[in-house]
Amino acid sequence: MEQSYVNIGAQVKSNFTYPSGIQPVAQFVVGKFHFDTLSVSEGLNAGGIFQGIGFNTYESEAAGMHPLYRCRDTTTGAHFASVFSNCEGQAGEGLYGYVYGSEVGGTGPLYRFYNPSTEDFLCTTSYSEGVGAPGYEEQGILGYVTGGGLAE
Image (cartoon, rainbow, N blue to C red):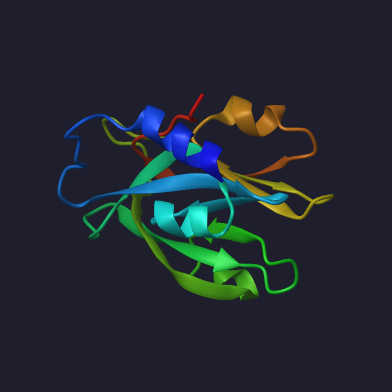
């Protein structure tokens, strides 16, 4: 757990705050699963290893945006993001925020990958990360977001 705090500390810039209306989504690895959360504390309390801020969502919806939901597979416990309010028949855990439905200035795609062997989901702004992860298959683009980048 100590290493997680050290990694976060290396990434924090003094006096930095996100612009009003922006919600950073922190990415963790918890056991064999990737875990995206709006709360760094939640990821750490789950025993997660901090990977960085994966992407940003918006607190309120504007023209051209749609909701991005946080979901949990009721069989495996794996968390995943979905554009469907019913979480594709799984458990809904709330809203990450809103994302654009098409590319606008300063945004890029948010991809979802799935590994059928480990039953894990990976959301990333880096296509090469997803296709480079052994066993993961692309499931599509969830929307268009700002931010991203893994901690070193």
